[in-house]
Image 1 (cartoon, rainbow, N blue to C red):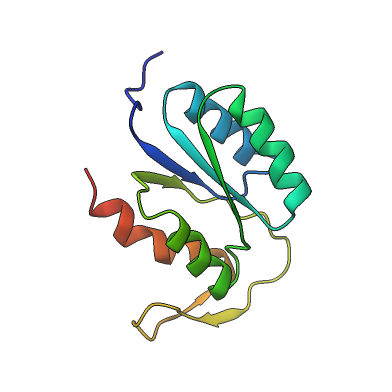
Image 2: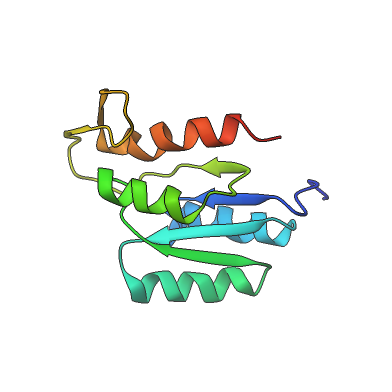
Amino acid sequence: MDLQLNNKTALVTGSTAGIGLAIAERLAAEGATAIICGRNREKLDAAAKRVSQMGNVRTVLADPATADGAATLFESAPDVTFSSIISGSTKPNRLLKSPMKTGIAFSKSMSSAELAWPATTSRK
C-alpha cells in the first residue's frame, strides 16, 4: 500500500512500545520520517533501532504528558506534518497550566494534542 507519505514527518507519542511503536514502524515503512519520543533513554533507543529497520526515524527524550516535556518535544520537531498522540500514562489526569499563551488548563493526556494541533493544521 502506498499512503504517499514520502517527505512527510510524523510525530508519534507513546512510541517506545505497543501500538505507538507499531504506528511509528508502519509510518516509517510508508516513507514518512517518524519522530518518536519517550521518557526513558534505553527504551527510546531500542524503539528507534526497530523503527530504523523500516525507514527514517528521529528521537526526542521527553515526557509529553508534562508541560515542559510537551514543549521540549514540539521545539525539537518543528517540521511535523501530522501526529499520532498516544497516551502511555495510566495515572489519573491532573490539570497543568498550558505552556502556550492561551491560559488554558488541560489534563496531562491533552498536553501534547494541545501543542500539536496548531502545527499539524497549518501544514499541507
